[in-house]
Length: 317
Image (cartoon, rainbow, N blue to C red):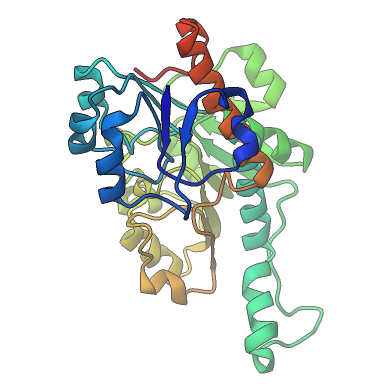
């Protein structure tokens, strides 16, 4: 089988499919034109979550049977075109859980203790930093309320960390979780309005859908508690950045911690100028351990597909 990768990934993650012809770029990734010229011979395609697989590419993939997406999301793939061609699409949900939860929690701690801001000032604006008992104060997480929007696997993993640190957990989901699951994670189901009104920290972990587009906007931000913190490691388009900037600049929000952006890879100049924002370039799953496990999960999906064990695949369509 010809297995085509859009992006250069750790080779050790693909040991279980080494008996096939693995086509990987020598540099970081194939250009769109390079992929367009190669996809005709591909039986299986492994695109990374940041690589757009559009209708044109799928139309040129005469032999393509499986798109084993490298990522938990799949909004980079034209699913309708894949479905029309009877191409199965899979993803890698399990390996991203712990790295993303770790990153969300790291961002939360960083913004509430002003770590990125003060590190920068000590390096480049030392004259603006005064040592002192009542200077450079942040906010504590112990005893505070964390509101999780989207209590899936990543949301649950964040809840586990937060509970261990003495936080109260509330959440909002499309459906309330069973009582035994709520008990396990010490989490209480509330309406979205109550979550916005009572949370000291709001962390987004829901999938991107048309309904969740600009979930965080003027209407919802106006309901938040003064001094709250927003954490987003899900999808940038959940947040209307112009409205978020307004609430960061007027002091209603203490801060925001963002791994994803509405127009990424472009980031608003206004966001870049704000000291009460900590940002990372969409690296929520970005550990070498996590990347290798994601490769292995792609391979598992491929091997299940080739063995006709469809029920064992992380299948999208």
